[in-house]
Length: 505
Image (tube, rainbow, N blue to C red; front, side, top):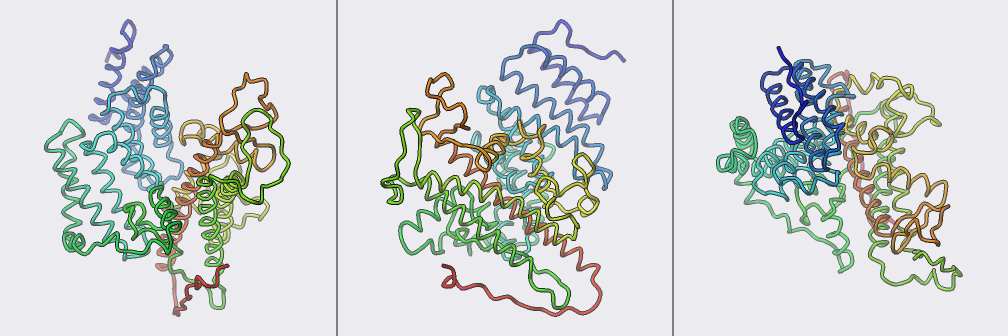
């Protein structure tokens, strides 16, 4: 059969041809045609395309890789492979499209498609906490884009199934049912905003939820704003900021920005230990959680400060004429950044003990824990676990530590890694306004960053630390369920009492 080429075609016609080939490959499950479409995309990408066209080309490329991924679906071992090269390519291309300068110039529907597909792929990889942000971003562009709403609803039930606290299931079911029912209604009105063939599947998912949960009764009993938010105005403002930025260690904060979610209630699931073994993992998770909430508070204090602190009075500093920013509030943001980043390595330390990986302490880090050797395969202990949240941790680590992933799979991931390196080992200068490199007063020794960029990057890192702690807790829950199936003999229950707030000082 003659293979079409883009020779002699305009950029627009070439894009249309590639889009048609990808659609045909997907419908016919034709791997060879998908590969040919990718080859044509490489040819077109060698041209000097405008940014919106390049972003669109990356979207088509991602769809071709999605076609290639279908071959895995019948193979359970391949589906649970931690590496997932086809999904990796999709995430890479979709993120590159979403982060490109041409993204905002694209048609709204295309932008929604890119964000929705990106959410889908992150969810597949186990990064279900972060996936929701992309579906919600698509709906912020167009509230009628029902594919984003439907995928968000279905994914929410997978998230609910991973939770150890059954008390949250009903709330998750309520929100999932709302999304799915509304998506089906929108699909009837706007069938062109998605694959209408999927509408019956979404309706079936909604019916299954309604079969297991009294959704109407849950809705009537809900009182999301009926919880305390603090004793004074400052505490209430702080908790409101945490809710809006989805920073509470509470799964409900992923579906509610109301007072019901304004408490850090997430801990570890029930677990089994040998007789006389102390609750080591509980103590370590306590420490991780305390470090997280303290980093979160310092970030909030650092970004809201408007007056100099008395500890900075009469500290002799010189004006280097490049708008330097000094003071306790800046240092609080820096400390929040360092603490949030350190949580990731400590999660690796937790996993090494809990999963008995046997890695020497000096070699434990969030980057190295996954493999015996830097370029070796993922450890069998992870690959054979079929543990979705732990796979999410694995892919979160890729964003921060793998060179070929950092540039486009996580916005600002390289910037986060570079900032951490300079904060720990070199010299960071914070500016009220960003220095211009041609400025004669530009500090060539410093890693320069504006105060607003420092605050935004720290907020993003704290959000990543929150996701990582949720994946850790729910990954342990999955592991404990598997251990319970293999456990023989009698077990006795021991309860731990909550630590009173009065003891925290």
